[in-house]
Length: 191
Image 1 (cartoon, rainbow, N blue to C red):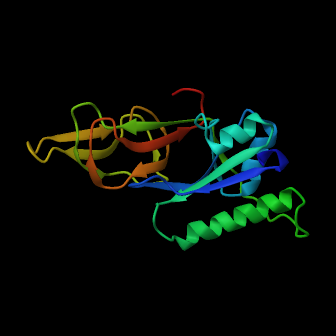
Image 2 (image 1 turned 90 degrees about the horizontal axis):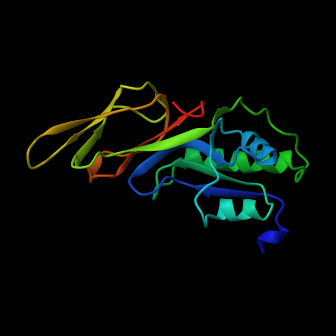
Image 3 (image 1 turned 90 degrees about the vertical axis):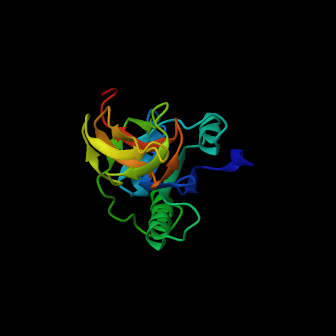
């Protein structure tokens, strides 16, 4: 069925117990996909092909330009994020000449070639309290949050090993070793 599609826009929230800054994820190595991502008009584009087996990656493999819009938290109706998604789909439809309306003015996009999840260090699980917020521009060495072990009351600082923008993060909650805390995106190939 996908073979009949001209383009694909997948709409998502963050995964459980996380929140995402409104963003488009796209394989930026493909110029057609890059333009689709920019014309969605959300302002933030994060590069990456997507996980093996994902709808976006599989559609791209068969020649269908595909992007994913991610915003907000799961299991909540966040009207602002829903409206952004609707406007983005309308922008894409106008860009692809699917409607009679003229394209709206598209904001300049912050395009991030790389991103990485910063995770709870081994042996440092406990209650997570973020100090940084979604959309924060951070620098390497900056304090992002604290994890407190409820049994020992020992405190572990979450320090960023890189500079970039926080585009996704865990909400304050209990976390185990390896739990994804902050999704950081940056412009340069490697910090």
